[in-house]
Picture 1 (cartoon, rainbow, N blue to C red):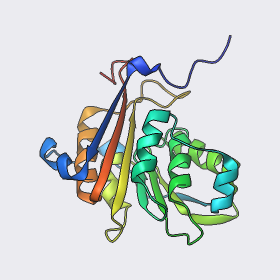
Picture 2 (cartoon, rainbow, N blue to C red):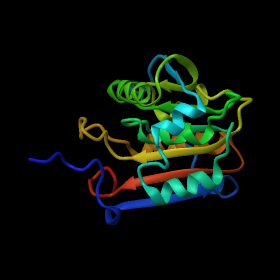
Picture 3 (cartoon, one colour):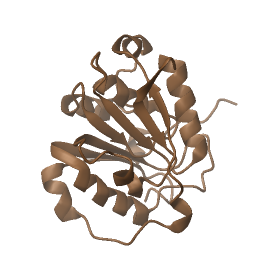
Picture 4 (cartoon, helix red, strand yellow):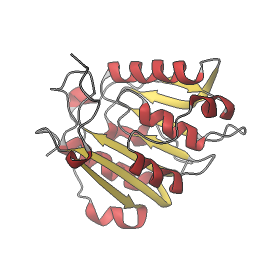
Length: 209
């Protein structure tokens, strides 16, 4: 039997792109993150050269239409956030977009599941090597806590969300509205002028709807 596709077809995906100037009025203030989701801060890091990223051949995020938008917003040397690392495909795509030889670009990635962080870390090491450290920082925490890991002096150009469950993982562990709403609020506070929040929602399961 062939393995299931990583994601539902396009008809079951909803894309939402919000610029920093229009995001804040759409958000509500909420309470803090659920206690089980708020864990001790720790992180993995991966660094790669621009040449290694080019050799990896990652041109877009997993969704070509979304990757096109990202590439027209994100520039070399930018700081970006992958709010839901999953298996690392979008993390690597963002790394390719921000990396240059100056080493200024940064990708801050997070996922509530340790297995997702481990999977992303392994995927990045396989794709671009692990002889350097620094360009990507991965944290196993709730995305509502992104302000704790992104430096206050690092304006963020893009925050990307992929709302669903971990492909190949436990489908009962999903992104939920309350903490995701808090994460949207946090994203609105760290975005630079002209930056965007990118939201991809898979609506083919109850959590997506």
